[in-house]
Amino acid sequence: MAYYTKVLQPDEQVKYVGKLHWTIYRNAIALGVLTIIVAFFSLSLPDNQRWIVLAGAGVLAVLAIVSFLGAWFVRTSTEIVVTDKRIIHKVGWIARRTEEINITKVETVDVAQGVMGRIFDFGTVLIKGIGGSWEPLRRVASPLQLRNAIIVG
Image 1 (spheres, helix red, strand yellow):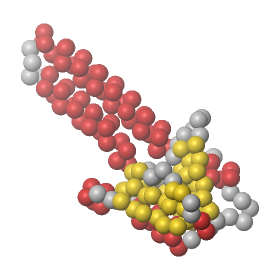
Image 2 (cartoon, helix red, strand yellow; image 1 turned 90 degrees about the horizontal axis):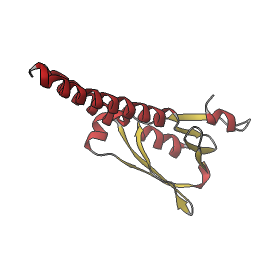
Image 3 (cartoon, one colour; image 1 turned 45 degrees about the vertical axis):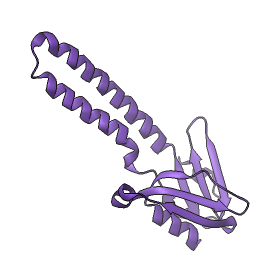
Image 4 (cartoon, one colour; image 1 turned 90 degrees about the vertical axis):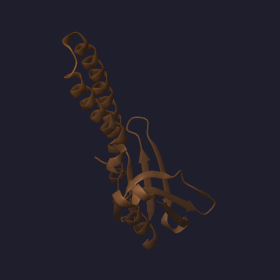
């Protein structure tokens, strides 16, 4: 059960549920591709050298899996929810950190997207409330939809 479903007030309606973009897996993808390249390179080597290169490919494969699992855990344990009354941001599973702000206390919502962010539709969202601001929400999928859900409030 999602965290936000446990903390919703009886008359509170969910307007938007955000998530982190799939590009959070970029390191795991790069390591996986490198693993494949090294493994294919080993085919051109003599048998007495092939096992050393294949061992290196095995290490890269383990690193790719660990990187993938870490990114998956971060992506699945992060919740970004906009309701008609507040914004909820939760990170973590066992050690949890949450931030909440009333919609009426939001001053501005800034969105930063680089070239790759525009192409793949991800970016950084910074929510500024009256008297302070949140830590930037990085690699958010569809950041403009999140901004619009907050602004329309």
